[in-house]
Length: 237
Image (tube, rainbow, N blue to C red):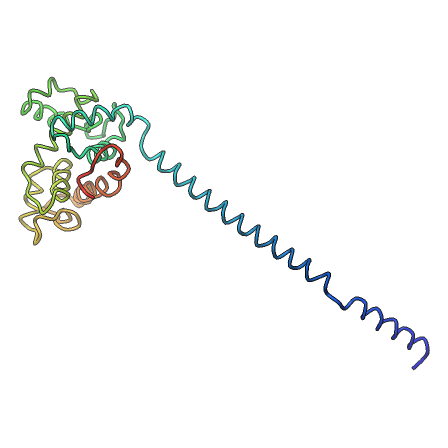
């Protein structure tokens, strides 16, 4: 081997021997790994916190701001008609579904106010219960009083397996008519159960109307009612 080649070979060996130990590299890698873990943990915590904030914000925005100014009125009127144990959360959920608490709400078919009374229904309930006073569906107090009164009138004329199912039938009747509730019960193998059973039966109405009517008690009792749990009890657990 040429001399120069031997010199360069020895130099390379010495250089390799000097650069082979990794005691300085390993700690650096460990440090980087530690930083990586910290960043991942921090990122995960931020995601979790962001999700919690988003959830809380969504819940806070779910109940319309307008609802708060009618809370005391609804509770008073509900307890006046239903007693101190009135299912206030259920009625609040119903108003939520009907009008989103808009006092001046009007539907394309003519329903008006917080409770979305049709003029004919408002006149009828006012005749049955003169204590309601002059028909005024756009008056929030009259509308809430009318809603809980009409619900009670329907509730008293329905039989079911539980309070929850009885209220579900009453809500179905509020939305589509008591006569259709009776026809569904006549055709049902479980006439005492509304949710998912009897109220899913089409008694002879337009399919779109049937879908709306079947959905009405479900969305009120299972979706909206929990939002108002601090307002009072609900008809369904």
